[in-house]
Image (cartoon, rainbow, N blue to C red):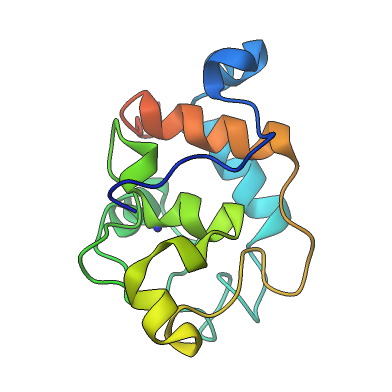
Length: 138
């Protein structure tokens, strides 16, 4: 989505990325998801376990639910990026989660699947949005 997971070495923290705090809105995060994750083979259709289409309030509610792969970790824990399974997947840190180390196929691959990781700036924006409490659409 990690209880004690650290950020990847070399990744800027939200504080080290001045634009991340200012861009930490639902709209900025949804823009990243739409461009990078909202495909029929991932989160844009029935293939993915989390659909990022539909009303923004529904998508946000789905992001706050427990992850399917590691049920003890919410997809997003408002205010706590380190406890958010979304950040584990976006940063490719599944090996840091005990359940994933024990059964690597359960946790799958980093997101976006089959693509390079999001840029450090994009990950910092998502991390800052979570740290800001994962605010919903305005």
